[in-house]
Length: 414
Image (cartoon, rainbow, N blue to C red):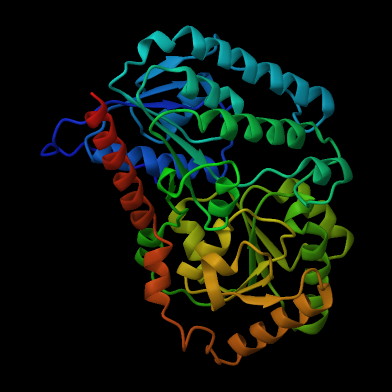
């Protein structure tokens, strides 16, 4: 993912792209940060010079991803946040965001009217500078819908933790951002899931203000990895969080061990410290291999070494790991969340939410089919078409179209 981007030398001179990225505060990064990388990379390759606003943690991110460190630092040093999952940690994180907002506002005089301003989040610490800066062309990215106030208060959505502060200020931030940004002339909202369009229209945006720039997966790397012998019956990757259906995953692993001789599973990513003690309680540790942090190629090698991918999540905004499994040619069994069918259609084998027994039986049946050589999962489906739709190249092409559109709007307003 981190090959150095190169500008297109034949491209007409493009306006500068200003990116406000104050949300990266630690070493780890998630799906939104991967999305931002691919959008930044394609902008550079299309000839748009980029100037970033972000903190020291973001500076480390740029260096690791081999992106140009053309950066206005918005903090004086990395934050010492400790455990941000606790209530005190959340307040420390809130203050950390606030100091980067102040640092950004102090540097807004660097943004010129001829620039294009972009934020890859709808959080207040990025959208307030976006709204206040002098750039005539502005783009706000909307990656998911915040929970409603009622969902937060009564914990009616699976991504709401017992410490409700993150969900509360996300709700407040999205409300503030979308209502204020709507007043910006020539403001464009990009969104990555088809369902978000109707949500944004409720805030009074016009159809022409909304551009679909989908999420993606690394199809190029997946195709580069050859087919592998099947070493594992089941694969899983994700954060260790109740939203991801961790309890369902553990029960499913124990059940499959009883049903299938020599059952083996692989857990991809940095979750061993949290999951292995739980697996030992059920004597599952000998059946599960932890890969640790791996390269993109190794991730797809492990996926292709697996017979089926289990997706027990109770809430997702898109499902990037589902896309990665599918483009690797691995069958997926998942609860039928509302976000999946608009993106993946019938390529996923759905079961009723949240019927653990049905989930387990569907996985067992698929594993047995794969073990017996009955690989009919994709036989009647156009996997090549799905891979094209789910590729980062498709997403990047859409983003280049957005940049060309706002450049035209800016030039017309000059």
